[in-house]
Length: 118
Image (cartoon, rainbow, N blue to C red; front, side):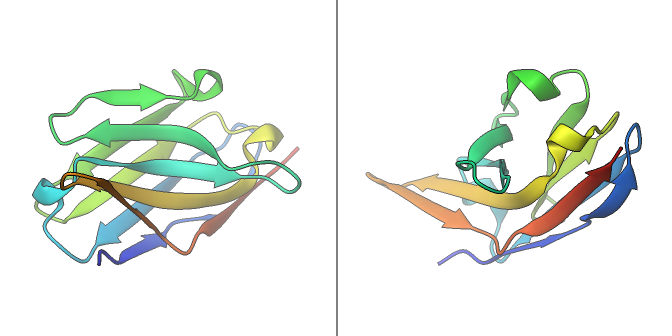
């Protein structure tokens, strides 16, 4: 069982920046993919950005060029740098970890609120 603890959410004005951090309870070298999803009110949870153990990243189209995801093995963490935020980025952001051991095991953090005011 992997525990994920997020931090760094908050309220920011449009055009501002925030950095989210997620620390895992075990060595992230064992985690195939780590990343961030978000869920806005009335909408389904969606991928924002994720990065594999070998450093391959993928992003939601609308955040490309504004957000950057990175992993830090020394800290057992994954971070999301969010720049040029706009009100459409307002959501609860969830850290996600996937481990493949013959089948996929998926873990979630508790979520952190990001609110962007116009």
